[in-house]
Image 1: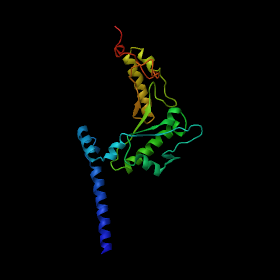
Image 2: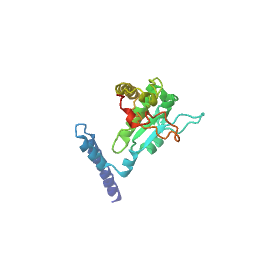
Image 3: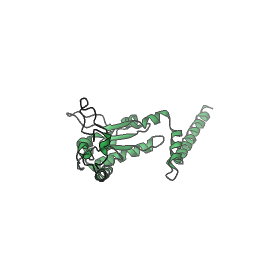
Length: 218
C-alpha cells in the first residue's frame, strides 16, 4: 500500500510539474505578439511577492580592491551554483559588472563580458520559475564607462552647449557602445539641477542650476 501511495505521489508530482511547465510556456506574457498590457497583467498575476521584490533588486560583480576579491557568481568559465541560486533564485531585476567600470578583471575583455552575460542569462531563463530575463546595466554619464568606449565631456559642459540635437547624437553613440557590450540599460543622462552650492559638492553629474536654462537662448 505504501508503495502504491508513493507511486501515485510521484505521478502527481510529474504531471503537476509538466502542467506548470506547459502553462508557463504557453503563457500570454511570453507571447511577443500579444498586447503589452495583456502580457504585463498576465505576468503580474502569476508572480509571487518574493518574485516581485526580486525584480526591484540589483546585483553586481565587484572589482578587486587592494588584492581582496569579493564573492562572485562567476567561477572561471562557469557559475558558482550555490551563489547564483542565492542571488537570482527568484529572478533578478538588473545586474552590473562593476569591474568593467574600472577596466579591471576578466570582464574588461568584451568577449568575456558577453560570455558571462549569456551564461548568467541562460541560467535565469532555465532555472527560475517564470524565466524573466535580467536587464544588464552600465554607467554612461558622459560616455559608456568601460575600456575602449568614447569619453565625452562632463554633464556641466554638455549643458553649456545649448544644443539638444548634438546631445541626442552623442547619446546615440553612447547607446550603441553600451549595447555592444551587452548592456540594455545605463545610468544616464542625469538631469538633476545643481542648486545647493553651499552644501552637497557633487556637481559634476549635473547640467544646470536652473530649469529655465535648458531652453536655447533667444
